[in-house]
Length: 95
Ligand SMILES: C[C@H](O)[C@H](O)[C@H]1CNC2=NC(N)=NC(=O)C2=N1
Image 1 (tube, rainbow, N blue to C red):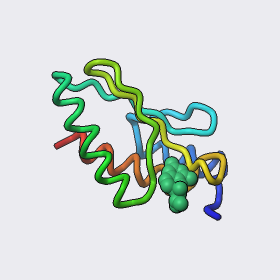
Image 2: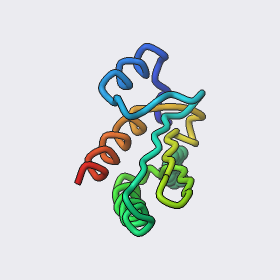
Image 3: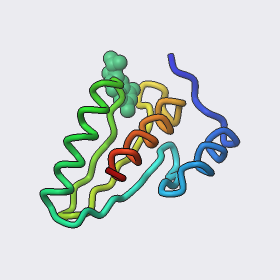
Image 4: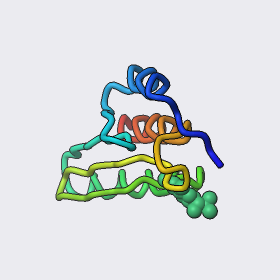
């Protein structure tokens, strides 16, 4: 099973992910897109990346604001897969 990151490892990962914050056992970022269709386009790109990585975010869609919550459900917290997916989401959001 994937190994949980320590608090120190999570802090170190977050120091390189300025858009993300820790909320308990998860990494969270809200991305506001210019329009609702833009927000959904990004959600679809994230879905493709998540499927490819077999690591899936929880996604909360509120009009143009989408909140991505990353944790490794099978491990009950944050593993290396979570900052990895956060970096992928950042790259897609910057397109
Ligand atoms: C069997 C398969 O590996 C699992 O169901 C995957 C799919 N996507 C997943 N995504 C996330 N975020 N956590 C998981 O534990 C997880 N498990």
